[in-house]
Image 1 (cartoon, rainbow over the protein chains, first blue to last red):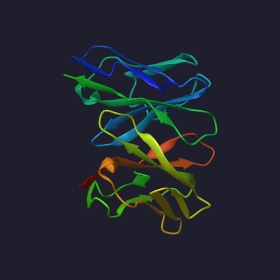
Image 2: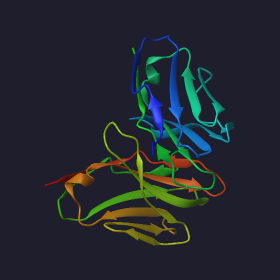
Image 3: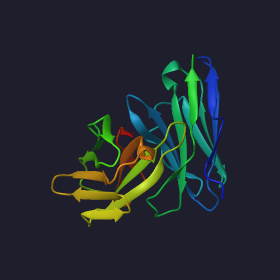
Image 4: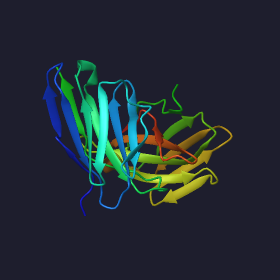
Length: 113
Length: 112
């Protein structure tokens, strides 16, 4: 059974460009989480959805970041415009409501030059 | 303000010996604690968990201990194997929420 799928695995872009990260959760999971990992801040939650509805976006750093979940099998995290300080590894994770165990994708390594 | 802290960025042990990874937390509302393991270029994977109403949970070579009065938990790996070399994250869930709060991780190296 496929796990959480993220694309692209690596993204290199120039400052000011728009970046879109994609995630496909595990089939049957109804909660989806976006995390960012940096050396300074570790693994921090950006936003999470339950049944495609954003529940908590308090971790989204600023208005340049937006996330959508148009259906149960797809979510995007968009950064517009991107800045060098956005360089990090972005993880998507999914789970079922009430479960504490989250399943992570392999991550997208974003480099903004 | 970090609610979950892993104060040791790295730990090195010999194969066959015990590895002890530590984690401290500040939020008394956390009801579940988890350990995740992460290899390079992969996402974190769930390893073991413990409910706040217990003080110990064991799964094979892995045991997690919880000391609620000290707001401290630890992961013991016995015996340690080179394949255990990875970054270990401590995480906590607040009761009634689906959010997990992660520590910054401890890089474990098990030397053959």
